[in-house]
Length: 198
Image 1 (cartoon, rainbow, N blue to C red):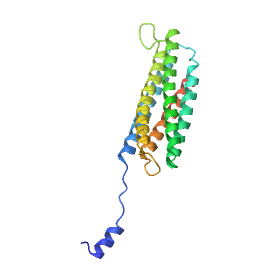
Image 2 (cartoon, one colour; image 1 turned 90 degrees about the horizontal axis):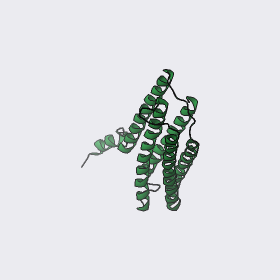
Image 3 (spheres, rainbow, N blue to C red; image 1 turned 45 degrees about the horizontal axis):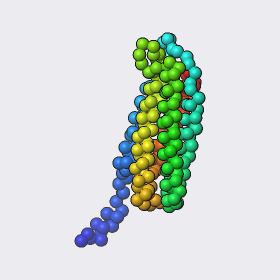
Image 4 (tube, helix red, strand yellow; image 1 turned 120 degrees about the horizontal axis):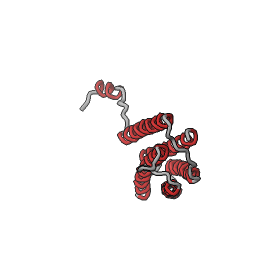
C-alpha cells in the first residue's frame, strides 16, 4: 500500500497530456492533403504561365456540386449538435442526409466529367490539353477523398445505430465532422481557384 506522503506526491504530479490517436491520424491526413493540393495548384499556375493553355467553359454542374457539398456540411454539423444533445433520431437523420448529399456530389462530378468529354475536353490522349488534365486531376482527387469521408460517415452511422455515438462518446463524430468540413472548405478553395485561374 502506498504511504500517505507518496500518495500525495503522486496526486500532485503533473498530468500527462496525450493526443488521441484518431485525432492525430485525422489531422495528419488533413495536413498531407493540404500539401498535396498546394502542390497541384502551384503546378497548375506554373504550367498555365508556360502557354498552350486551352480555355473552355466549366459545366454548370460545378456550381450545383458546390451547393450540395455546402449543404452536406450544414447537415454534418447538425448531426454533431444532435449527438451532443443525445438526440439520436435527429443524429441518424442528419447523417443519412449528409451521406445522400455526398453521393449527390459524386454523381454530379460524374456528370461534370461526362459533359467535359462531350465537349472534347479529355484527361489524356493526343487531343488533350493540360488545362483539361488539371481539371480532371483536381476534381478527381478531391472526389476520391470525399469517398473516404463517406466511408468514415458510414462507420459513424453504424455506431449511431448501436447507440455508441452520444454526448459521452463524441470522438468519432467529432473527427468525422472535422474531416467533412475540411472537404467542403477544400472544394470551395478549388472551385474559386478554378474560376480565378481559368
